[in-house]
Length: 283
Image 1 (cartoon, rainbow, N blue to C red):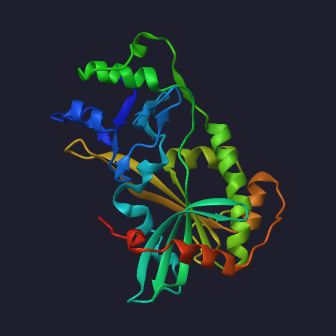
Image 2 (cartoon, helix red, strand yellow):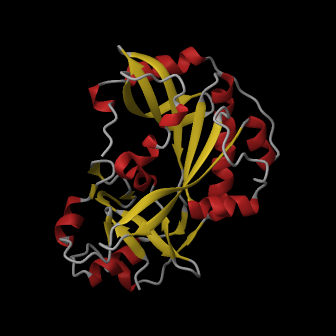
Image 3 (cartoon, rainbow, N blue to C red):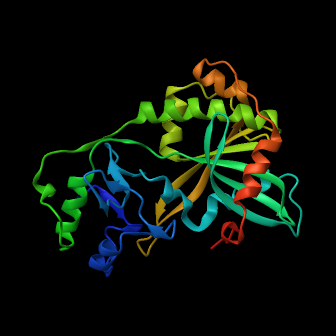
């Protein structure tokens, strides 16, 4: 069985899919634009692999963060953390906002008359791969009888999952960023797949995290499971939630807190990015 589960947002085993058209379009249905993961040797070619099979249980593993955007569900699941949001306020989703400690993938923002009333930071993390998925991708195209730009499917190169580095890197990053959010009394949410969370809870100290969650905690962790329905479509559903604070993340890694930032800095950057295009439109 080919290890590519989803290609350009489509189930690789989906019957009746117009694969030649899908591959030629190179579109990402989750972002509504061309797949941004391109080959280093050929930037005109998008790779398009969203989800793969790996491991003894051969469970689907998401390897592209954009896959987590499906239906905007992750944003809906953060609405309750907008504690000062009021009916009538607009909701906006603003991407790539830089704060001290790094860049945050998304902000879910409550806006009234063009002014920020509340916000939640949302960080996405999927598993990083080692090696290359390209040969498996090309084998899939061969099976689907789609023209290929090379014969990489004949090679022996394979890929693996970088569990340890992925988990440690995101925890270190979250430790730096959550200091900012705790200082300004706002929330930061980490979105992961359930299999990555399971690894993190085994390999790092997670027993002190709050479950059930404490709404007042600055750091929240939402994990999602991936299931396939009767029509052969994969979808995400919220599997579990945890919460903690700066000290809690530091306890996972044995780190110490450092930086601080003022609330006005983040609000200024958010308001500069708000526009009709950023309005949240749940599917």
